[in-house]
Length: 474
Ligand code: ADP
Image (cartoon, rainbow, N blue to C red; front, side):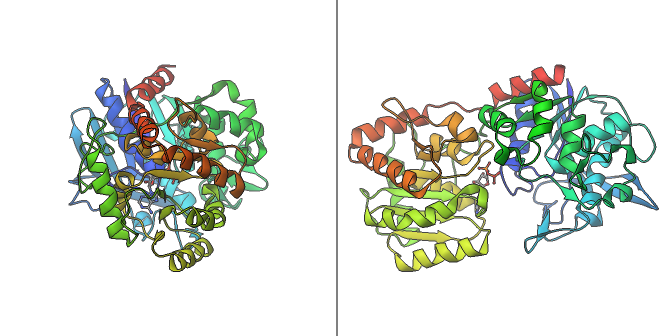
């Protein structure tokens, strides 16, 4: 089959979170299964065209807006005969960040991502790539299924194809003032609660949810939660209930080429389930690097992620003094909410031999942490899939998670388990889970056996790719 992907980020070109990891890996997995894939992305100025081998095709697409024809130059990267990435370059994407700065979304995001959606379909047609299915991701790409059904700027869609729309995180919906409807010349008959309107505003995510032929999200439990829970459904649970027969949860996979301790070049020493000695060396190196006491028998816990409400790091702030009391070490790598950053910094200043706080985005350090830590903490309030717990499994770094969404689907606690989970979202429940973890930590052989079970878990993309394939086929 021919499949067109439309998305706003992809590793290794540009990534702010799990979406980037997925778009970096799923097309390749599909290609390995014999399909032909075209991925269309914005060419943000942060993408280093030279470093990634992007080539200017000398061609461009034009997208009609009211009183304005927006053009985009097309860059290409084609790592395989059956896998191509197209990048749309426009001044609208030449910004410091992808979606906003200083906690504020860019005000013209509706135009920027409409350009991506309409431009992606035009670019595919121009390249003679008429897909069997179009796979659009999150609110930034959510107008694509609408354009396929209803056309753009008064003209029909450049071609017909089935559409699959994937929700990577329902908490980000792309909501714009009502005027955005006319600035995009969207059909005004769509401005009602059963289509694009969301409490008087325009909601991009709804375009995907209403017009996508099939809907997916990134884990089976999250697929249930967004229908059943008001908090996780974020105001769209009614629409999702209406479409529940077309909604499936497909767990994200892991790109084991990037995330495997036996091949990971970011690690001071590589290791595998057969020989774990390198992990002890990586732990010592990490403790040294972070200024933590270099003690092999001290449990080293880690957290990596965006410092936002979703991730539940406020719970960690509350529980960390109990970690220190129990002589446990902790490293945080993340950035975001300024108040949380301050709270973590204060804890690191108070307990410098136990707590290290790294407030930046650093992919290499993320790898060294996965390699060197003993345990990985994810107290998320909700978690569509979560990738770091899956990476942690492969590195033998036992996850301790709040049992929601993809965390509930991937982590099992108990005699034959490979991690720790708590149900109530409280610091007390987190502390109790830590105490259970410490009981296992006191039994080195039992801990090691759990590590080996973790490392044997298989979250490769092949199985998930097969499930997507069935949806593309219809
Ligand atoms: P989300 O998509 O909600 O941010 P995921 O767990 O699905 O969460 O994916 C987050 C990805 O981003 C992981 O690959 C994680 O390692 C990476 N990441 C997040 N914050 C940082 C950071 N500060 N430095 C390096 N990598 C980070």
